[in-house]
Length: 121
Image (cartoon, rainbow, N blue to C red; front, side, top):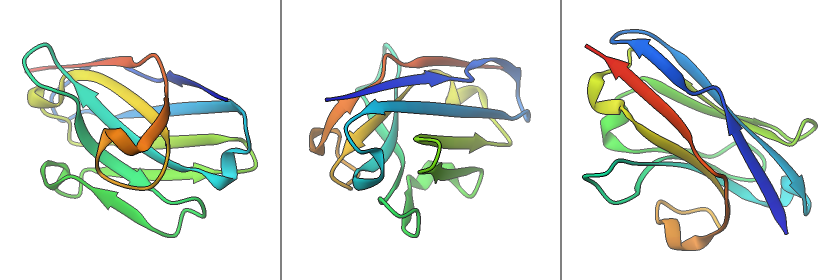
């Protein structure tokens, strides 16, 4: 089992920045790929970014457009999502997940509880 706890969400003005963190405990974190997904009441859960176990391979959704950066620190069992130039359409609950590297939520076995990101215009 892996337990994931997100933090760092909040309210920010458009153009601002936030850094999300996801702390993992339980099973060996460094063996797992990590992903960030987001969901709103109007949309299904969508892929944002993913990183492989070593941190050398990263993937981003097209809408990120170079604004977000995913990283991980295996010594701290933590994955990060640095979000810059935030837009109102980035407003969502952001979830981190652990599992097999992909852009699909179905390959991730473990999920955090989510952290709300709200971007005001």
